[in-house]
Length: 411
Length: 196
Image (cartoon, rainbow over all chains, first blue to last red; front, top):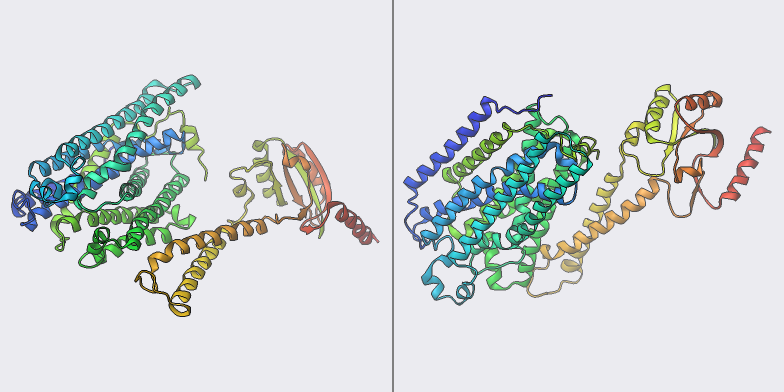
């Protein structure tokens, strides 16, 4: 069977087209939305420009970074079932540096422009008259924000690249004997262990607090990082599944069967419920506690223009997955899984939308050309990056020590 | 009900799979296959239908959900309304943890008992053992005889397919409560009655 993917003309056309749409939207945004004005929230369009860029760059960076995390957890657990589509995971993780670069540029712009409308703690006057923000200054200050973001993005990209290189080396080396595969596994295990520990101190705690929770600078929730992680993880798995189905339809990935698809479906099902669990924990404790400085976060979202979005979020990300993905037959059906992947990615995009928007544009949310054009651009970049990596490497890692486990995988 | 069974035991699962296939193709009825450990894909090879355990689990779960929501809703709105911290009388978020717990409890416990029932494994239940080594290191395939079938022919067929221990047994096919020795005596009595 053909083991070399060649991107068809239609796919290239779509990815380029989407990137052009994104770029055009950005240019139109720069022209019409006046991004340089109103750092104190007096210009709504300007705030909207940066808030949308922030939401999309963080969301798409997080869901591509999940691919690296997926390789890491499977290496740590010594699991082999996913090796048949390992190259797809690696292809998505190869987009992390690009997404990270874009996100970093946006963070830099926000800090250099003193955007107090996005991050209140960037506004020096507001901080000077605010005891709470003063107290948080050790953590919420431009230097810590930039250096920690840079460190996180760099190390995710660096270790991801190392894991990809190690995996690509197996193709050249030929079939490995027991000793060689053991050595190879020990090496990947080392990198994975570093990555996993670092993942806990970034996605597991500080990064979502810095990037997203500090938009509502007075409010805090210890569940927030896990909740954001769950949101990113389930949509990352959905993205992975979408590409696995795409490559399978292109005649690649000869060892991927319904069994692998069902396991990916189980991942989506399980982590949709995990997301709901964390979302609900955060919501219920603050609803029950009924302390004004905590409930203000949900008051904005529950009463006012975001009310519909609040319930839509719950329907898209909890009710739909639990009811549709529950049956075994549904998880083995290519159409239903494709539909659910798109639904879940969209649902969690909505989730990120309602994390960012109420704290920035407040009572005037928009959902028009700018909010739709920018994510399309990011989708185009992901499509381009994945097909770039995939067309350069063999799609099935035939010499991987775990590949047999993946071939005989049976649920 | 007492029936005649031909019992063939296999040493390796790589002999067992082709044997199961051949036996089904030859048209013999497989009563069951007993293995010392779970073998992936054997259920498919034997042509067993998909289990209905998950449907039972869903029904148990929904029962738990409705009991929890209905119970708490009735108590807090109709039977004995209390003002707790100024919260509404039907505070759904506060009910969710208990609803969740009861759903899990009902579906888990219900599914365990359904599983035991489906496998005929309730505590105290006795079944005939076709070959005691099937709990240790042999895979035992049991073929049910019809009045027309010739046990010797089936035994030969199994031998050709790689069975190492073959015999024909008269046994109770279902399950019962009680003791093994007592029941074994009952068989003999029944058999004698049948012969007369």
